Image (cartoon, rainbow, N blue to C red):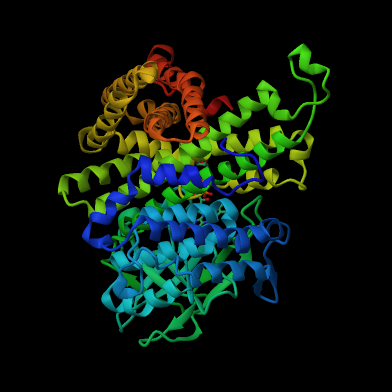
Length: 600
Ligand SMILES: Cc1cc2nc3c(=O)[nH]c(=O)nc-3n(C[C@H](O)[C@H](O)[C@H](O)COP(=O)(O)OP(=O)(O)OC[C@H]3O[C@@H](n4cnc5c(N)ncnc54)[C@H](O)[C@@H]3O)c2cc1C
């Protein structure tokens, strides 16, 4: 904690520390792509983001939760403040900010845009989902679309006239996209007739845009089964002609809305394509390469999910910190103080436990998310090809950890924020209840956390003979070596934990060869648990080391306390998870460490 007063969206001193001291944002200004940019320009963008986030996003956080999207006469009705917020976001140029100047962008580093976006995520995660989906869809077209598709779709998307979605999931195909059934039949003019049903499409229909561009996965007639037969299509809700003008409806029908626990401001839809055999889509890239292209959007979205989860934790931390300072209840354990009447909640050690637990996740998650954003800049603009490659590998490895471990942890943080509010936290009068419900989505969408754990253990940790693990290992050793003497015990503990994780990775690989994937990959969640905690410890040791140079003693003390807490209370659970993985074969033999399906 750094200051008294009302809750902040983000403590600016913390954001500045992470951006400028920890991850060295300013160094990017020496690169040709960012020539002429400086810290003053970045600061001005962050100021603007904070101001819009407060005025146009936080202003309707509770309203758009209570007045959830409704279907009236076939049209989606949303509180008008959502459109006003999204328009303010677009008018300020945030959607185009990282794009090339030649297409109307500012060529800002991805790190700067993500830091700005963190303000919007903390203010109102559901409203900012509309521009985020549009940005991700536009990025996908920018990366894989033809010159003609870029010409017609990118400018209106970056200006906020067309919105975007990702339409992957179907009623029978969620985690398993290999079961996608939507069909694409080639037409004479090179385009495709699309037919099928999509489920869960966020932002799938509303009245805020001239049209909505669905980035849709479908199977071209005759394509192979499984994910190798999926292709990516641009399917606009309304036809878009050669000049980019919006015309007649494109036979996309809104068949229903999903009524959600949280994130309610983002309308969630069931859509039907081609009911009248008149839905036209355009292929993006080569046939049958859709999933690989879609990963471009999904990886970006996964980092966004982890960052969003951390920002909801941040918001809950800020709310409960302010409440703990204000609400008086009980007496201090110290007898002398007990005569003085009820004390603020923050006096109670157990309340401070819940505050520091939140701080560790919220600030640690923000630091990791911005580090991941920095890796995106590194992998695209670093002068040295090896640096680009290492950044790519590290990002691949950290993405499932940020998405899954941090979204689970952020939910625990929101739970603590409710607990600090006592009975009041269980009512709709206080924000923390909604923050929890909003955050509950993050372990589910963009690949469930169970699937992310399998991705981490089965793919990312072992890809290219563990190359990504190697890159992270080098970073961890570097951080441990540069830690000051007073953090030597923490540095040693981190190196021990890393050694144990590497040993577990090798042991699982060997077990996979011997026992097969079922038994070897079954403890993926335990592996994620260990890896997440080690990543958290690394990010905190790094912060505690760099903060030594900060002049603000209160801020420094807060970071050091959070680092100590992480190593004393959080990291040891990584050793427990690794010990369980180690003991698995002794206890369960060649079987997975969970009861057989017949047990239930
Ligand atoms: C509010 C919301 C918004 C969404 N927005 C979008 C969107 O914009 N676009 C879009 O395309 N989709 C969207 N989704 C869909 C989302 O990505 C899926 O819900 C998610 O991928 C899980 O699919 P499912 O719901 O079918 O669950 P299932 O796949 O049926 O999974 C159910 C459970 O089984 C587990 N499981 C499944 N398969 C495996 C396996 N192989 N190994 C281990 N465990 C497994 C899962 O981890 C999960 O716990 C959204 C979902 C929600 C709830």
